[in-house]
Image (cartoon, rainbow, N blue to C red):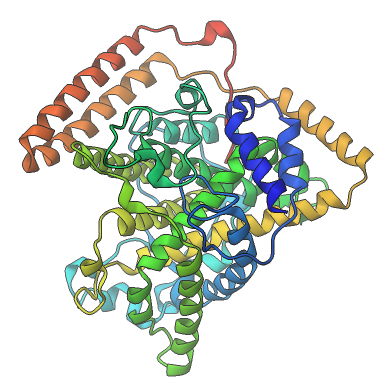
Amino acid sequence: MKTTLQAYVLALLLEPAVLASSLSGTLVRKGIHDVLDHQLVRHSECKNYRPTGPIETTLCDYETLESVNEELFSNLSDLVQLPFFKYFQVDLYRECPFWNEHGSCMDPGCAITTVDESDVPEKWRSTTLSKLEVSSIEKGDYFDLSLVPERYTGYSGPNAHRIWRSIYDENCFGLSEMSLMSGKSPAPVSLPDTMSEAFGNEDHEIDHTDHCLEKRVYYKVISGLHTSISTHVCLEYLNQTTGEWAPNLQCFIEKVASHSERLQYIYFNTVLLLRAVSRLGPYLSAYDYCSTGTHEDDQVTLDKVNKVVNIARNVGRFDETVLFRGQNANVLKEEFKTHFRNVSRIMDCVGCDKCRLWGKVQTTGLATALKILFELDEKTLDPNSNASLLQRSEVVALVNTLYRFTESLEAVNNFRNMWSSMTAEDSEDLITKSEQATAGKPHPSPRVEHDRVGSILEEAQLRLVSLLRVCKDSTVECLGYLFDCFHCGLDALVSIFKLSGKENGPGAAHGEL
């Protein structure tokens, strides 16, 4: 089993055509079979520093995560139904800060309803929190996440494509999918089997241009989120002919299975989230989940939390200490934070209420995980000295985001079962239909010139904010940052005068919401 999976991983590392497919609407037949023919491993332990089937940029392997995901998903499924974790407060109707209008989804599947605050446990109501410290007050409406499934809504087309295009453009390092694929061989999005290998050891000089883990981690986080959302859309897909909800294998083939590297990013994000939960373990175990006022109910919540934390300690093998090191570490970290924060702001431009809600939940959850990994030391994470470390919404978002990713992995297994039950003739026919459907989809043209100028101005504003923060701490880093900004600004000005790309025909799209 491990030999098969290892061969699959090595194939992804050595075959640029497979990696380049993440840009293309053209299906990769080999990728479909790699994803859907794979058999899950039910028993494995992540004890070796060099696992046999490594999840890139982590210290764990596919087999280990697969062996515990069923139990993990089961515990999280129960946990997110409990009062503390199912009510999420968020300001869902802020104006889009990036363009004047955004397309609204008129399909009933896009709509959601708020929860009356009287239905929320009293301890977490705004009226109660307002009597406490000001920092504890959260703004927005309450939503019951257990009543809002993340699934197909009908929200697609140019508006949905613009959202994802903007999110990928927010890659603060200028490392778009295209630039990743056009880098040096071997495949530029592939990383060493362990994170520390990218930096070697202290006795050797390292070219950080060729081994910038931070850039690739950022891309993997965003692409993993995109892939997970696509998986949920395909898992609960509306058959508009029958009106029934059911898994859509053709949808999954088109959006995920035909580009097998996308599935890697779901595994990667799951390990990253588990590492954050593992580090936050003592804090979560000491947290006051008082919801109903009864000791029995609160103990049920705590027991489920502890089960998830225990799994996270065994599987969340991600060495965050090798990132953001060196002379420009603070600069890089500041840009990383600023642009990821911007991704959350882009969610305000989503025209589908249900999509916007889950976008907000999951970007908040991932941002919380990144904060835990890269901002907080062990002393800060100590619940005895910092009981108010996180807002309630951050804890809720972190757990629900982890649940979404474990559900995506369960969904992949569901699609594999559907695939295995098909005859060779039927599966070949389905691939052919998927190829025809993908080939017939028009891809969005590159953004027009005024959009590019607006993006450049926004980028300049963000870099100015980062500059001010960095210059407070270090004059040397400030000068280095100014030098980098000069080159980025020069590249941006050159891009204004480039051809729009329309003369080459329509471009490729990564997918839809």
